[in-house]
Structures are given as structure tokens and as C-alpha cells.
View 1 (spheres, rainbow, N blue to C red):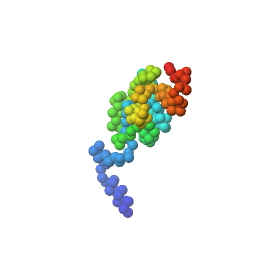
View 2: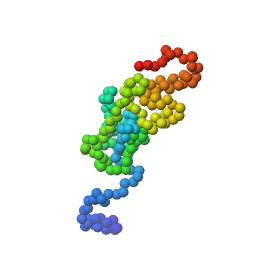
View 3: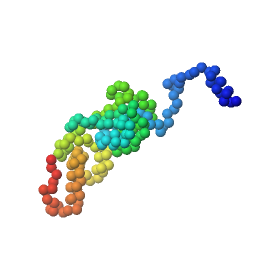
View 4: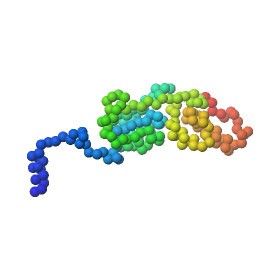
Length: 180
């Protein structure tokens, strides 16, 4: 009987559409609008790899820049891109995705451009590591010049440090040095 009363009560009332000010409170764990910080991004591609619906992809202009692209229409808001980003460049805010602003102006696409910088050792163009990552990698006793190295030169410098730690100074031949 109570159900019949509820049905009749709803039928006799006028229909009502929720006003924008009447929206329910968004919980803090809500995964909504995505933001990307190009200053923290290393263009490693992890976010694009874990994105099952392929909402994230990269394009590259060789020697100049790498562009990060996101299309909200393909996003499932699973949060894997945020969880797996090694530099924490991606965040899902508790905002409704339709309120996003983007460079293209439609609110559905985001693009961030990451400029390449020359290596301070060999001159090869590479994506610089964010300052927080640099501080974590070179916490103590590191050569300040190594902060501008490309990945190949960082590997070379790490192996050179290992060589000098285990082999006396005079025993290492200069012929094994990595130069470009």
C-alpha cells in the first residue's frame, strides 16, 4: 500500500529538473577532471601505456618537443595514469570533467608541450628531469653538472662512479670513455 501511495504522489507532482546550484556534494575520492603538469612530466609514456581506452598519447617533434595529449571522451576515469606516473605529473581532481579549460577551447582535450633541452655533456636533445626527481636521484655528493645530462650520459656517469669506486685511479684506461 505504501508503494502505491508513493507512485501516486510522484505522478501528481510536476516534474522537476535539478538546477546547477542543486548539484549534490562531490565526495573527495571522486575522480573527475584530469590535470597535467608539463614541468613535472618526463614523457616516459607510462600514462599512455596503462590507459586502456587510449585517452592519452604522445607526439614528438624531433629535437624540439614532445606533446602530451588527452581526450576526455575516451577516458574511463580509472585513475591508473595518476597512480603510475613516476613524477606525479597527472592528477584527477574532484571537479566535474565538463568544467575543464583547455588550449583548444572545447573542454574535451588537453595538450601539454614538453620542451627538449640539450645535454650539458654531449648536446643531445632530451626531456629534462623535474627538480624533485633530480633531488631524489642526486641527494648527496653528486656532481652538479650531471643534472643536465641526457639518459645515456647519466648511465655513463653512474658507471664511471662505480668504476672509480672499485678500481684504483691509475688502473682505468681512457679508451673505455663514452664520447659522442
